[in-house]
Image 1 (tube, rainbow, N blue to C red):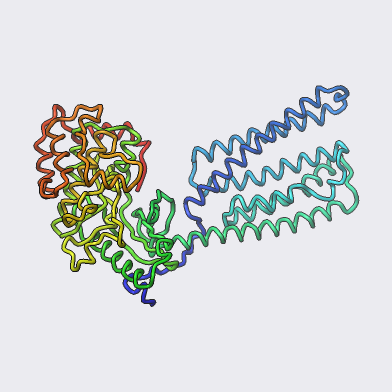
Image 2 (cartoon, rainbow, N blue to C red):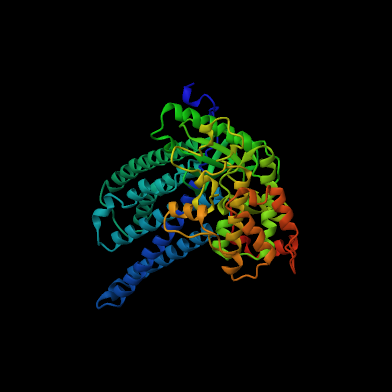
Length: 523
């Protein structure tokens, strides 16, 4: 094992016997089927318009039968295409059945085109088509759209390839046309090779999909759906190969390591393992649960956490506007519960912001707050002067809009009261929908936090904010850490003492979630 990765255990890639593709790729396949059906319906509709125009034109009376057959064929295609598109769009059946339906539509489309070619032969419009079929392109192209390996796939490819010879043979046996000698033999040979090519395309595209699935295996977890991304990486919905329990996997991409020296990578490995272990050791129900962590084969750092159903506080305010004071206090007290335990273990979060506070439906509880992303956590007592620096020289760790003054001025050390300051910034955002300070650049924002006095949130919000709550938030935003609440527990105590005409409770929270749950998401 290389020196750079000695602190992180590697995730073994276990082969899977399943022929299924990742859920998001399967979803893409279903969307392709819908698009294909809609395009087919649109082209068939154009065919109906063309045939009606041809029927009504001068001299078209001699081809009434041909035009009527074309119109009936196109109408059937429109109805089938729209029907399949609707069924797949509504997800009326399990995915495997919907994919099989899409494959069946591929065979039906081959029949549709074969009938059209037979009508052209009957009408003596294009006799050369007796020797080949446009369906051969469809037989090769369609498996790339629906790259699912199954007996149904192979059967549908062969069935689609058989449509042109069968339809022409039937047309000739009914006496509608006399095919050129040896045309059927040539057509069968052409369609046979087209089917072989279609099967090869299906196999290759399927293998590519399986490669994506293998690349998405992190230890015992398989990535299924991208839930979001940020500066350091991205979060995926994942499933365990043995357990039913869903999870969220956060990836720290190898791109982050570009330009780093081996010693810096080694230090990052140590820090990563320490941070994940520190978070996993926390027991508060309001701290996100960590299940696993490791280093994937491609060098990607990852850790596995519980999958939450809800919305982060940043998106909550952006989507629904400022929240009422009693609900904001309800949120903040829960966040304090998580931070208080971390602080007692000498751990500082250092990146408290609305995006890292997740409001969710958690079992039977609603508006349950989870503190996320302890990725910047550090020991409160530094072992050396170099440990006091938050990142590389000349930079700070955290988010400028929620940055504590001591990280900028350096007058005092960063400690648990720094998280209290950031929590005050979060409360300000929840109540007003605005940042404590506004500036054009991150550096200007940092200077505002270091030197400017905040305007009370009550003067920047359309909501009626109690004076006691105003005072608590302003206390959290004091420049001197000694003037702030001295612990998350003290902050929670002060918040609990604020009286509201109507407090926020589980009944009100449940009502809100019933109204808005459709617009929320997972993390």
